[in-house]
Length: 137
Image 1 (cartoon, rainbow, N blue to C red):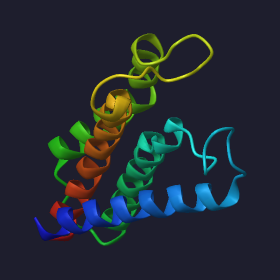
Image 2: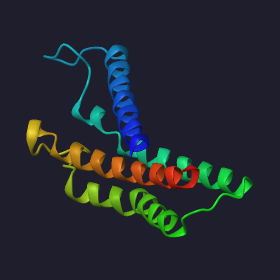
Image 3: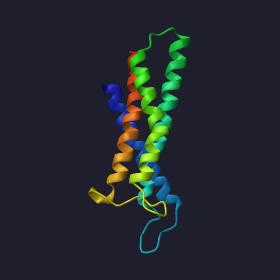
């Protein structure tokens, strides 16, 4: 459980740093004091790719050290990563975006779709971390 909590904290700090760096590197938008848009809060793609890399590296290390691998958990994680790279982007395109490639305003702070997308990406990342925790003990 401690490892999963550490992962959540590192993920959120990384997201905060990404937003900070994006904000510092951009010029202001009209009528704003910064150059950030709501889409800058989307991290699900980063987290899905990180999950794939984490799972792959865990499996490589586990095989080189002859560590037992929980196959059902690995398969579940693989399915989550594959869905995150195939079906999920398509579903977001259908439901979460307006014409002009702008994400729809919905929910709390008009960021509902961003929270949904990041929540899915976070769960995919945590599934890969859970495999690593199980493998390494």
